[in-house]
Length: 286
Image: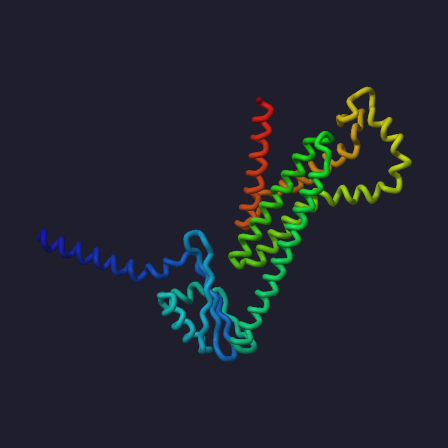
């Protein structure tokens, strides 16, 4: 009796093992998506899935146009059953032209995207360099807090630039262009507003200089401070407020995006600010 039970148990385990081995290929692709485009002379199949937390994209080319034959060939390449392949198909599109024409068009599009990404990275690098030069020309005795804020903005821009360069290396050119644009915008925010203020106030600067000097004195307060009855160095007071408003607008939507890359960029920016706060706290505690 015991021998019979052991034999049945062994058979059951072997059967389960076989069933699991058959099912494993379909389960091996995490987040599998399949898109099929059928052309006049064949088909292109785009397959994407996640592996070790990274997205993998592959393309298969077949010289058949029958949908059932495409499923069969794809099932063989993916080591899946035809039924499983059908479950993961997101779309099947009938396209004009030939497979070769489609591949050429895709290659041209990728080259254009790569060029746009390269230009965006170059523009971001130029903007960061100009921002650093602008900060270097500021008088450190005028407003150390403002300079710290500007330097933090430059560091954030550099973080976006690093993301752009990494995306470019991974051939994610659209992401690279987007990160580069964020880097450029962040760097330009350091100096463009001051340029706009200078242009608007250049015509009246000479006429208002004496009046501003009197107003800056307030009611005997320190002319270098900002408070309700003493404008102080009004240019820097207004600018500090503008930058605080910009920072507030920047962070109000943090954590709301569903895009993982955007969330990673936001987290990186917050970590940089946290490090800066801890460094300042350490300095004040000495």
